[in-house]
Image 1 (spheres, rainbow, N blue to C red):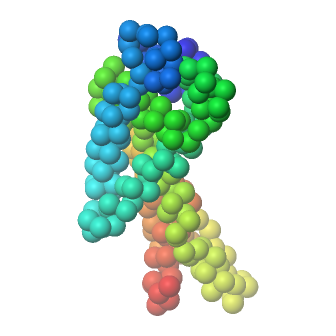
Image 2: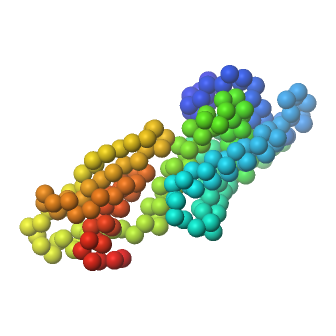
Image 3: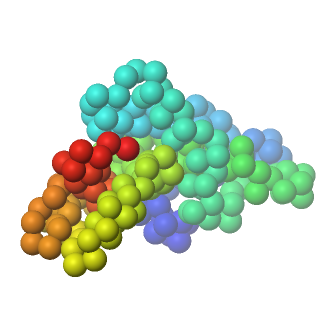
Length: 226
């Protein structure tokens, strides 16, 4: 369990909570273990996850309407995303499965691993409170959110470069001028320079997103709206 705790970046006060989070109903039924399966923890974890993600995107995207917030939250907490988080942690190596479930590939089943991730989140919440749960889950959610944004982000940097290349003597550069916030919730501020002049300033949850934002501002300053 120590190896898993290291991956979780959380040390349990009550290790039985983690053991319960890793116990599938098939194992609980076969062994009649006192703690039962992780199904109750999964129920709680689903609710905790929804609150954390809803709170974060509500505060981060202050101008996003309710309908878009709902879609964004759904994309971040879907089975596909949770399965990916579970795989990253290697949860399949620690699951307690019944013999039949194990033989049928239960340790690699997306729904089972997604449920286990939610159960682990609930275990951390019960053991360390909401701050611990937020710190644990946001490091996964922020990476997923960044990927979602990059996938949907227009490539303003490339467009700006194409515009500037019309004048070969001009040079673009991106300069990180500030970063703030805890490790799991950083905010970066970047300026895009044309030679020594500031064309635009942007912020983002990663340097890449901040650079894209700065490039967009520069294009708007030039009267180019993409």
